[in-house]
Length: 168
Image 1: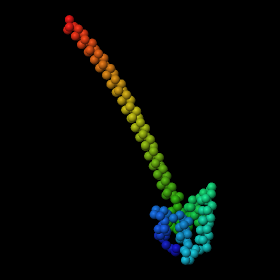
Image 2 (image 1 turned 90 degrees about the vertical axis):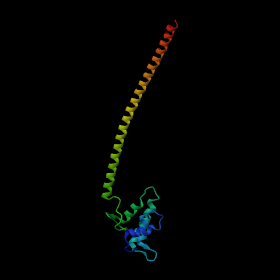
Image 3 (image 1 turned 180 degrees about the horizontal axis):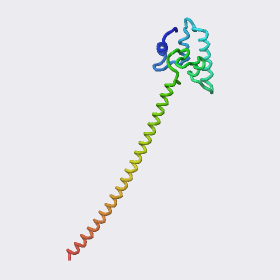
Image 4 (image 1 turned 120 degrees about the vertical axis):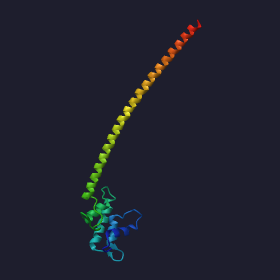
């Protein structure tokens, strides 16, 4: 493959995959270290590739498992900021910056959850107070209706007495 930039090589290989599907690192290693015209770039590259394929066969089909990235890291050994076989390119997922950002996001999520729980608690209190107020008002309405009915009964009784007095 030569000294083509990592991004360019990755983009070139990505053209053979369905859109949005990244090649796995074992495929990419072969793509960058093997050509059909010249074969493997070195005996070491071929040995590494064969070791990766062997580990892939063992660990992706059995009870114990390893991801493709873990297999490549095991065979090639990675250093911070540099992935052997890929060169300087994507940083390993376990960088300090990534861990710090993940921790920040987790803290932010926890704070948002607490705020949401507090807001929900406050809203529940307000709802309970409103329900109590509605119940009190309904009780007052029923009392007033009872008073009105009682007064209407008294008015009827007084009208009856008045008619009796007027009829005499």
